[in-house]
Image (cartoon, rainbow, N blue to C red):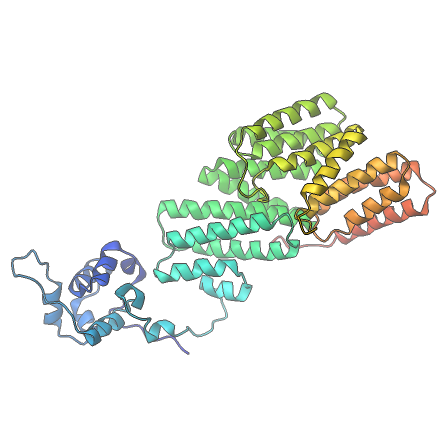
Length: 450
């Protein structure tokens, strides 16, 4: 169906979203609606009269203030007349307590450009973002509190799905979210709403950076991380800034840029001293120190991180990617002790990580952590002469459906070096090395930034 032609007195969104207009509509005080339409929408009584089928003089009588000494103004009480006003002024039926009007149900003609966010959603298959769009449309405004809450819920769902959901799926959904939220930023809103949307965009860029890096899109991930940091600075949001620095620390860690990693950790601590991101920053510092062979700094960093973690309340949703949960501490200590050569303690933590990462039904709820734990067990096995156990653990880790390639390959390289150093003539060790090289060659393909 084609869109119904607008009437000469259709109330624009900025008038419909006013509290006084909505109150008058709900009370069927249409004279007050006419008066407010003229004041705030610059709609003349002549246009209103033409749209609703009344004489201009009658519109003026209904719109006069009741305080002008001429008594109560006329009211519209007949149902069919109310519908004429609703249709003439294009007032959504739910605002007036009536069923949706026929013109509300008509769909606009299909266009080839993405002018409307809802078109963007329908073409992108965003799913969770549809709810925000429907809530926005219920009040015919650029944005409202219900839509903002729905956007935040959508971001929360993606962050909680990060540990286990398919990386390509997360990438598509996060991109859809960024397109939707940035489109909303073009609309009319208060300063508070603008900041909330800006913060939402910052969280989406953070998540996008993580997913892109998991997929091997290094340059794209750097762009997303930089965008998140810029937004954090513009919005004055310390936690977003700190997470942007945490992501930079992670990037540097997996690229063996130790000084850059230490600088990013310090910048993250400077940005935020309150949230759990600080725990992650200490953990990164410990992991880098272990790779540099500084056992004292490892212990110092782990102690500081554990102290920060113990001061925080246990989260309701520990699976949320941007909330550090106590169970993840085994993962950090596992990594540090493996690198320091304390195989017994590393293996103990690795088995704990696998146990925590497995649900009651046997499903892995944190497959990325479990994969690195298996590599740790593989390293410990290789060092004690159990080559079959080492390669079995390593192969299972590399075959995980959900993986963060840079982090996984960082630990897989450690196992590969142990195997080649200790068992250079073993065909199984050479096969494992070739398996890693195949994965690395597969990540070298060019990627679009977003």
